[in-house]
Image 1 (cartoon, rainbow, N blue to C red):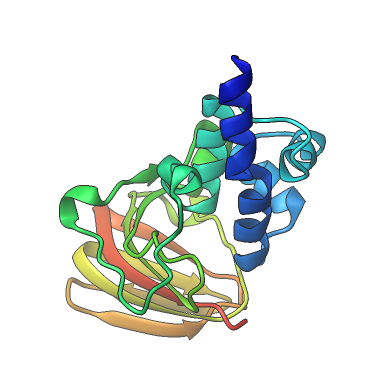
Image 2 (tube, rainbow, N blue to C red; image 1 turned 120 degrees about the vertical axis):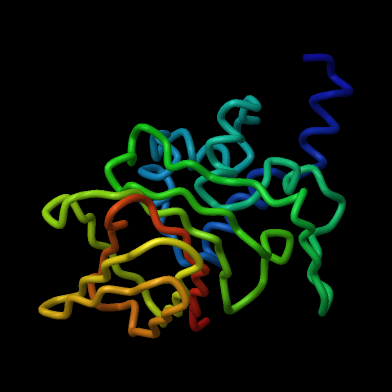
Length: 195
């Protein structure tokens, strides 16, 4: 890489951007390592600006953090009071092979705004057997609205079947999981993450 290009990349302060996004999303270095399929030492070097990640590595990090790769090259993120994401600008994040067992794909709906308490997504959940549901939990609350298909929600002893047009609101700190029934389901999900 030419010296001028190295200087331009350094001026973007990608490592600090990655670290700020990760901490704002309340993710540990281990969480990001697992989601991006990268080693913790490598991520640490990137966050401390000791190494400049190649585009392929930065793409994995961007996908794991739920931002487009272009986020790292903007002069400033959209942190104004209003953020618009046009339909044609939405992008899907397919969970990669290292976590494909989760069985969903999501499209972030407000990705340009970094500092926010809510994370809205369109989530496509694949059909699977009940024993194949992968459970997760996180701080905050979650709202789900079924746009298409039939969905099963499970949390502890609670099992709820949701049809198109049904909605659900719950404490997301409890382990929970979903599955499409008789085909995939498409939902609108809004996650509230207290600061």
